Image (tube, rainbow, N blue to C red; front, side, top):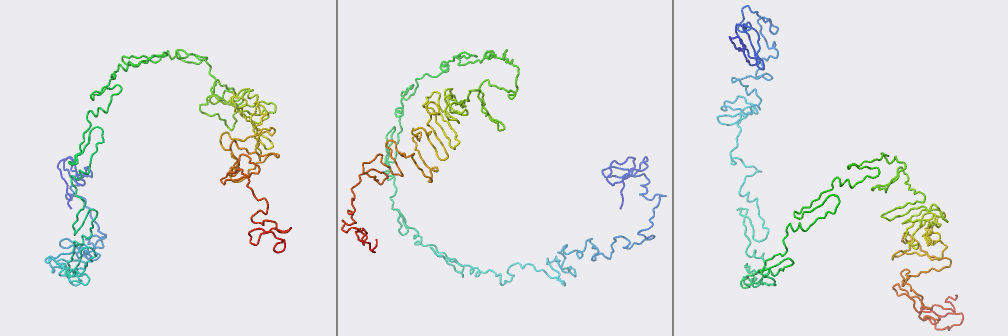
Length: 635
């Protein structure tokens, strides 16, 4: 292979060389220099002139480098296949497991290619086919365009399509089409109804005959106002005419403004609306209005700004600031208080100074926290501001008045007093009184033997007859008493006791003979029941020592026991009680009855037997009779 080198007679190195390109400069200054191009365009010098001369020929006196041996051989060397590593022998060309050869056109013969590389091979004619063909290859003769395959011994033509079905012989399963076969493959069924349908499988003709006139007519029948005769449909309804329609309607003018009429000959309705007179008659002039020939006018003077402005005024009633009004312009002018007005409204009290609107305190600063004051006192009412007064760590809240002071609870001007009574005759100093509108008199007179707790609901202005003070006392024997304040404004002479023990509830103190009443405050019923009004338990009303139990209804009321209404008064002597069957009992005179045994209808009329006879039932079991002995001879 020749190596091309650019030569230049100048002294300047080439500015650009392609990668691997050589250039030689022969200039006298450089003495001849060889350059080569690197990747990226950099030009570098290799050497001087003598290396270039060696490229052009062996320079006289140049050193000769001699090859002493080739593949271990010296002298005139002849190399065999084995002398060169991986060398291929020419004997393997075109052979199995060797290498492919080339034909005169420089191509690998098809015989050395796999069948799938060249499945179709073309030749000028059949005579040009290879003497021995290959299986799997299609051979084409170009002169006849016929195709062949190698059978293993000869070329066999591959038959093309016959071109039409005429050349294909009919088989036994897939038969050819014929008219007879097609006609025989179908049939027709006439499922009834009007008309008819038939089929001739010899000719393949389908015959359909449509419904006849009688069949069609049979599907229709005449309804109201219709007649059908031999297929002719007619109406029996009178034919519409304008005159008939016009005569069927009318018009009524019910009065009022305007008019409404109807002409039955022409069918024209005529409406004439109200006239101006009608409309005007519907209106009349009220206050401030006049109506003349339909013209509505007002007699009220038309509003103007000056009217409104003169209708109002402003009064400045004094005080700070000013208020004025201009009834010409309608402007109200208000001037608020000035600084001097505000300052004049305040004055300095104890511990306070006011100078030019500056308020200052002259009091030395005291406690910074309420808890630091061990003896706090209120200078006014305490406002809890919606909060509660609570204790911590389960502590008590103690309100302890001094001396004879009491606790007064006030709600909307109504006070209630809670006080501890002082000891007095028959009392305990630990009693607690709760009463409304406390006065010293009511508490000091609250004595008696009720030593536990007293509640007073009396007004300080009420008389003693309307006292409603209640005292409670606990007894060690299991009974507990509630005393209601009696006359004299004390509990000592009170007879109003309610005692609750383990098995009874008692009224009174046991020493007073006054009757004890149980009643309701209003008109409600009073019910006495057991076990919360269920069906268990017994109600027993017992008297004292040989005392009566009186049940006395009020007025015309009656005693009703188990649904029976008893008389309100005693009857006459020898009267008996009688019921009317509806739950009402009354006294009635006793009717005359039998006064002797023999007067009965089912006994003998007289004593016809001797003494010592007995009365027995007769043999017919229908009456009594006298008998000397019993039937079996014994008594």
